[in-house]
Image (cartoon, rainbow, N blue to C red; front, side, top):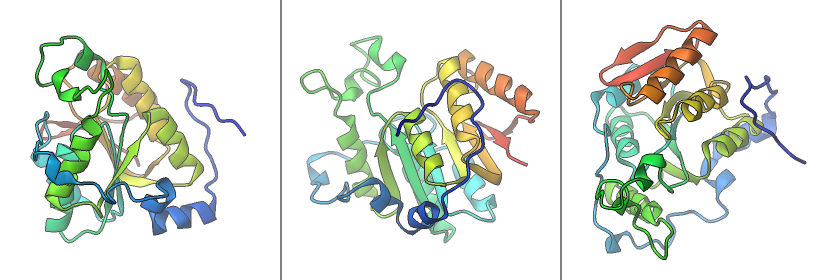
Length: 239
């Protein structure tokens, strides 16, 4: 059986009730035959949450305002700074939601442009030419004690979206912060809008980047949506 995600508005799919029930029961088990944190020695890594915009008050504000919340999806997670910020906010407000972190951990275009850049290229932590920053992400989650709340999904955003749709999984909050290229951001919006629950919010960072702003305004215009802002994040709400 094959699947296809094209740069078209995806057709509505009927959720498989059994798959949806299974996903709600244990998304970690649905994705991983073995828990990714099992036997991982995080003490060999420092607690390194360096990143961009991960401590924004918008995360806690949106979580506090959510009336129904059992899953947050993050597309583009890097070292997990924003996911950990959201996990802390969930704990603070007594909400039991989990956070699904979707990333290839291979770095966006800007990470490969300058070999002398300590914040991007060198943060890839290349080993024999292949990034290993994923393990820094796992370590940061462990240092924060959020292994039961934060679930890694090392996959492209498109394939991850297809997986979630075929299993009938929806989310009330979806954070888009992967590639900053216009067509990539636009495609992420197309792919994750059907996964956003009614009344939910899809939001993101870096609105000052041309690629992000053009993609968000283009999608909002097509869907007749109003772009709003919470602190430094742009928001689109599904009516």
